[in-house]
Length: 175
Image (cartoon, rainbow, N blue to C red; front, side, top):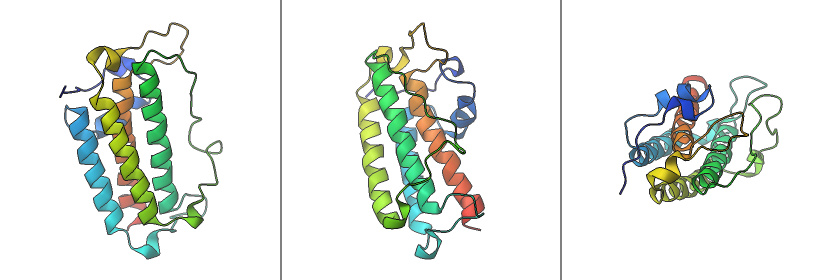
C-alpha cells in the first residue's frame, strides 16, 4: 500500500495548517487509523450523563460535536473524491458559527449510534484514500478556484479536524 505523506500547506486554505499540525505522523492511513482508535476510546469514556452536556448555553452538546465530526468527514471525503477524479465541484462549507446547522437530530440519537456512524464513515474514508495514486492525491489544477485543495490535504484535514474536536471535548466537556 502507498504511504501517503504529509500535505503541502500551499495545497490547502490558509486555516488548514493548524489542523495539519494536530495530525500525527507522516502516513495518512496510519494517522486515520490511529485517530479513529483515539476517538473511539474517547467516546467509550463518556458517561451517558454527559452525552447531552454543553459547557455553555450557546454551545453544542457532546453528541452534536460528534455529529459535526461525522458531517465534516463526509464533506472532506467527498471533496477529496472529486479532486482525485478531477471533478470540478463547487462545495464550500460555511465557517462554523451562526451559519452552521442548528438541528443535528441529536436528541433522538444515542452516542453509541453516533459512534457506529463514525466508524462506518472513517472506514469508508480509509478505503477511499487507500485506493488513490500519487497523481490522484495531488491533483489541484482548477484554475478558476480561489481556494486550492488536494485530496491529500483534505485527508490530513479530516484527521486534524477530528483531533481538534476530540481535544476540545476532553478540555471543555469532560472536566
